[in-house]
Amino acid sequence: MPREGTGPDFIEALARGLEVITAFGPQRPEMTLAEVAGATGLARPTARRILLTLEELGYVRADGRGYALTPRVLDLGVAYVRSMGLWDVARPHLERLVARTGESCSIAQLDGSDIVYVARVAVPKIVGLSVQIGTRFPALPTSLGKVQLAALAPAELEAVLAQPTRSGLVPRWRPDRAERDAELREVRARGWALTDEQLALGIRSVAAPLRDGSGRVIAGVNVNCHAAETPVEKLLEHHLPLLLQTAGEISADFARLDAVPHVVGGGLGGG
Image (cartoon, rainbow, N blue to C red; front, side):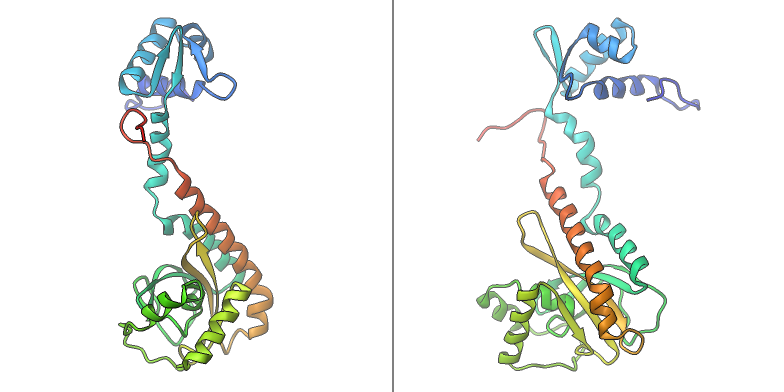
């Protein structure tokens, strides 16, 4: 870390404080004042003032002759992670998937019997339906909806599908209960869903579920294409493996986000 900045607004004291924090590590979780000064190259009086300031702020604790970081230091990293929403975390993965498939890719969540798009990276192609963040479609005839409906318990599935759609769209595929259940069983068994012009003419897509740290399905991610341009064989043989890989990577990032500790105040609570 540079001790001196390149401009008049550089705050050297802040840089020194961060240098002291980053001097601690697995090989030296606790250090004396002399060791901190030696590790940072700071004069002992300067290192002492910084340690006392960090101790008062709750980032360092003094234990006998040594100093150690407190869990509150996690706040510094958590602030970055918490500032990012789930879909900010997912966006780089979507962008890579779009680059590898040449097709638009989206993430949607269930809202009643509809799906609502919450993240999307589009390519400039003409499709039959306009999609943007906030667009809603009936869930059942979409690949994004199928992978989420398939994860529901039977009673919950019936309650969800009993709710009227607010999309204003009448899908081409309106199955009876037996056909619907057979389709969702197949989706559940293979772990992905295909929609081939079931929502609207020309719309073909494949989707995979996204899971949180507990394994619960919280959304779906898809690759969407025009039926006249992309045959089902290409969608399944080329795009689907890339989609499944991306879904796993996004889910792993969601799990990491769930695992970030919540540090409250300046200490650890009991109970």
